[in-house]
Image (cartoon, rainbow, N blue to C red; front, side, top):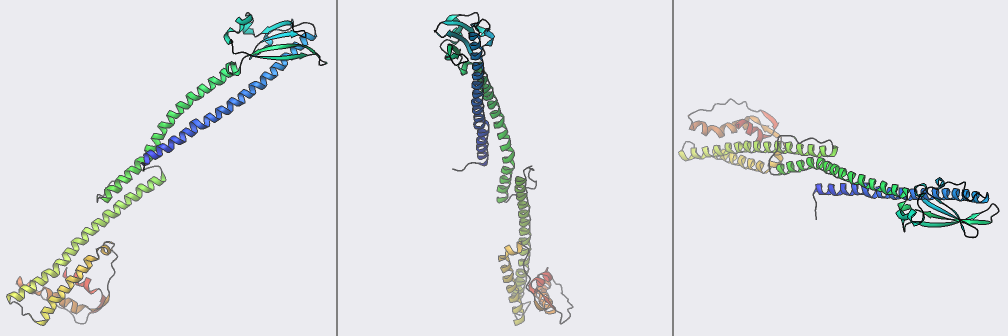
Length: 349
């Protein structure tokens, strides 16, 4: 099924927009999300290790957490319960936002969503001195997760805005490209029907489209010139055909009225006019060659004096019917290399 140029351009622009505004941003967002998640995990591992070392130092020194503050906990760690080597709870640290809350109430905002992780506490010689149970927010509901989610929402919003702008730009560019093409197609259709617009097509800042419209304009001008030439040639040919027909008619009327005796020479002269009429008909058949204005001359060594005399004799009956005498003064022996048929046309005209 054939589609219009406009629909094809719109489909191509749409495909390009979808790739640029959906596929590429989605890939970039996915890569950024994975990199950010990896960065957050590495940072949490460093913070956890630092926390464990501080708790180990407090137990080894005999302070059992008295020298530690809740502020040492960093997100996503919500709480840290410290147990001795015998399993008894020594102390608990809570994030600053939950330091007044105890038990399940402290985690009611994250109930059922906290993850737990237990890490052994070791002395300098590698002896186990206890353990710490960490309650950790999952990445999706951590500050980092909320930041990433907000970033993706904003990205999606901007993608929608860019899609709308890109769609409007695609329509604008399609119309800008297609309008001169459609105008050129319309002018070509008018030319095919014989209408040759005089005004020029609207310009375009696209080189190839400007070349197309200029070519259509030149085609219209050349065809208009050819049409004018054809009409002029048809008019000239009609005039050329009228001359021998008139001469032959005058000769026959002169024979019929007894003005002329049907002598051999006069009959031969009438026949020569008929031959000339046949020659003109052949030239009509070569109208295409005439329209191209490159018709070759048929040159031959011709007695111009004799040609002029024959031309004058062919018109004698016309002059006699009008009561006018055709006088001529023709020098003998004037020979030239020329196209006899065309010179005869010139003389008769």
